[in-house]
Image 1 (spheres, rainbow, N blue to C red):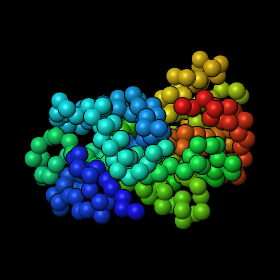
Image 2: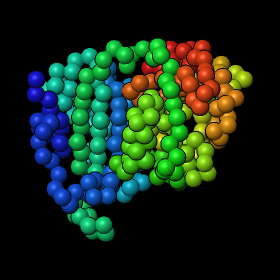
Image 3: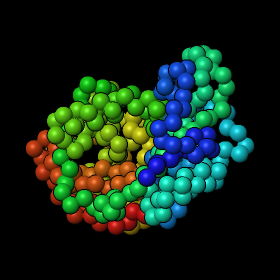
Length: 276
């Protein structure tokens, strides 16, 4: 069956050539993206996604047309899913980039965009049965500035960490910041449990500002959990009782092993039931 994408509002075959050699997203990674879960035509944590997206576009000095709103993008996403016959659940990737131009002279600052959509299978709606095995990627260090919190098109450290994980037969890898502390994983935020308290690194540590992370920080205290933001040293995970990763599509995945330390998943399994 032909598969379609949406490019600036046009539904095109996925093999259609889209960008010129001067495209700033291609040249400089000049842009951001959102990965979302769509269920029954509704985006899970929609408000968080669009708040993050438009905050990032403002930080990157995009010029936002009046029509370019969350509601507009939602309709673009729904139209694409209808075209691809994705009626129940889909993984959505919205990529926004600036138009062509040199480093100092973009043609304009209006957003261009590509939306892709894929079917989500049943395993995305249940907690992983087998815990993950996770390692450390040491070759790139994330800075601790506000740009590190964006889902930037300049994704190279995460790409290389994912390749390293595959080479080492790991399920994922943690990335370190310039202070040699863990900030996040290749496509997920990090949480750990110790002495009945749930911890996650603060955004000042350079992690991506994940929407599921934000949801849990707001929701868990109301459910009776003790939650804190805390810098994550590698040695902290040797003392942890549980370790899990969160993102918008998988929700929560529990980690079984990190550097010969094994974890349980009792708290993680409870928290999974709270996710939308």
